[in-house]
Image (tube, rainbow, N blue to C red; front, side, top):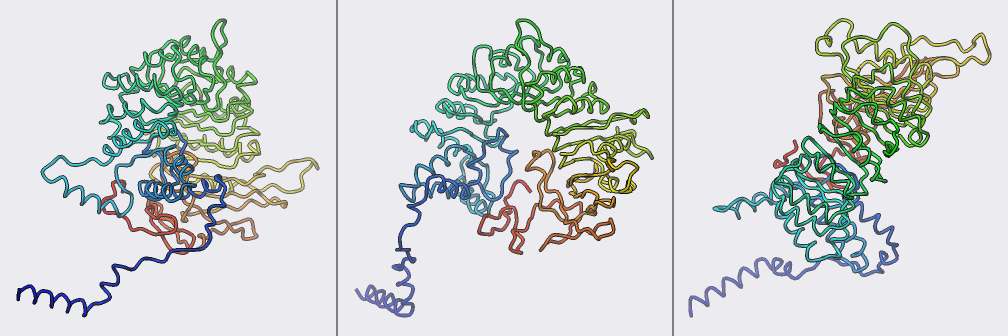
Length: 560
């Protein structure tokens, strides 16, 4: 009894010394008791607000998980959106629709929480197999959609890490089997080559997911491509075909069964030639596409593309054409393709050349609709370090076409020549008073954004070239390697690298230019590939920064 009495007396003494410690346990944060203004919000406005809470929830692209980039931690954003769904009954329908429309499972947290969770997983897995977070999340998602058909019908996009989709084929098959409105899902590489291990997943996707929008067919998937004749995936929009052996006649019949087809990519197909575009009795015509991509297709020539673009429907529908390493379509044929494609807005031409252009003059590149041009010409390895590399003549041809005002609507130009922007302003100015009153001076008549870089550079250099003034003086341009806030990857895809650099151009009144960095920014070297940015408040934030709050980089980040 004496011992317990002494213990009670010491406890009372501690409470008297720190009375505030006891009061903290019963205090609650301040709660807003005014009118609820959110009750008057329309569902469209509320959805727009919640989209800022979880930006990746509106990702409707058909790109793989690793090709989609966004700021902040997407796992934390998903958690915040889930909390919003449980906040009010009014918010549940809108938040749940966003939460399950575009599902993304990441391997790690892109914030400091990854260190905390990694340590917790390390403690729990002592003496056991380590826990794989994305695998567990996929299994939980599978259990959720199989138990709740209402949620399963809301899923349209499912993005998974590479290792998860490669190692969890059975779980992925059970998940997609209950997703009738699924439009895109990240699939293992073996699925596109006819691998036997993906047979169950392939059957479930064909039988249960009729609304798939994108599919790829690689070497060994000839039977999978031919199965489209049985009526699978009639709503396909994007088809990529690479390194397969197939009959052009059967391929045309398959395309005839896909009324929504808008984007087709051919890569390394020796059997593909100009006949794929020819009309034949009893065979559907080649479909009118929005985007056509040709990679290492040697037997398709400019005559075949001209035949395809001769049809008014195809000519007006085609907006983007990508040509990469196609020996049958040289630079000298681009002017005819641009002339035939009256609706083209974006052209990509990539080639490695070993000889310069012939001395005979070529018609300039002319188009009244082209807005973006990716003109990537590189000299062969044996000619890169010569005094006169072959690629220089091709860029000179492009300069001549631009100075002749043959591309009046062009606004963005991408070249692999770091000095290309300077060459545009080195042309001699034209006198404003010509022999004829109707004479049109040479030079630029519209502003042009030039993105250039050398072969050994990682960042695109942005240069703004302004048109010449009324007195015939040359337009101004930016120079050097100033800091940029423009991301070429947002408009051209991740294959264009990371952040490009951007400058502000100030004319000096004498036909020259002054390049100054943007406000609250300073120049950086061309070799710096840091993805830090300025958030507009003068504070420098990292790519882990969320909107409205800053977070430090994580030592457990796998992408640095």
